[in-house]
Image (cartoon, rainbow, N blue to C red; front, side, top):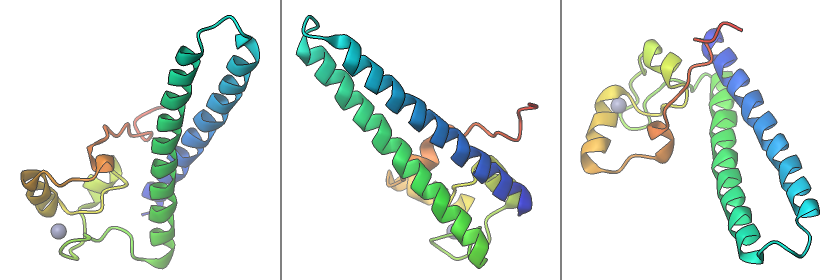
Length: 128
Ligand SMILES: [Zn+2]
């Protein structure tokens, strides 16, 4: 469980940093743009940024929630059937909230949350 906690904390930090650097970029873009650039392009970029920020924020919140669940001992149980989720599954997908059986059921129903669908890059695989 400690390993999963580490994965989540690393993930959280990573997103936090990306979030910050994007905000700085956005700030620079806005300052450099001036009046010559087509406003609609800027507007589109801004919307894209907001969209990304929204996703990141949701991701971040999901991580926070998982960390909190670890603290309270509620982490790692399937939301659907209450079974314990396989540890290996959690190592690859620390934000998984369903056991593999329920996940497959949900997928069949086309009713799966976007997070479980994100390709999870396990930071545990990196050797830095
Ligand atoms: Zn289940």
